[in-house]
Length: 93
Image (cartoon, rainbow, N blue to C red; front, side, top):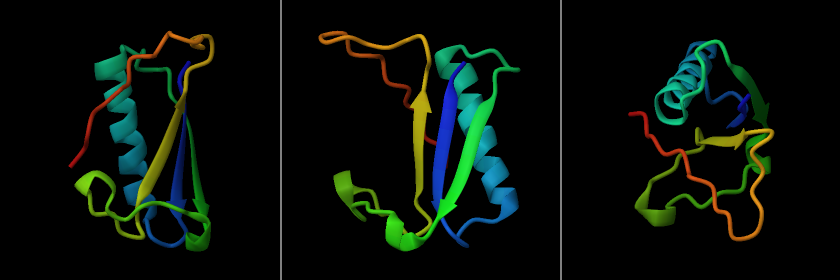
C-alpha cells in the first residue's frame, strides 16, 4: 500500500489541478511500481508559501511558487543499510 503525501503552496493550485496531480501520481505508481489500480492512498496538503523551502533552480529545473512536493511511503518495504531502493521516476508534463 503506497501512501503518497503531496504538499502545495496555499492558493496556487485549483481543485481540478490537485485532482490531476493525484491522478498522474497514481498512474505512475500503477505503470512503474506495479501498484494495483484500487490501491490509492493520497494526502494532499496546502501550506503557507513561507513554509516551503526549496531551490528554485536545482539541477537546472525552474520551479515556481506553485511547486509540487511529493513523498512516497511504502510500508513493509523498509530498506536497511546497503539496500538502496529502486527509485520511482516518471515525469508528467
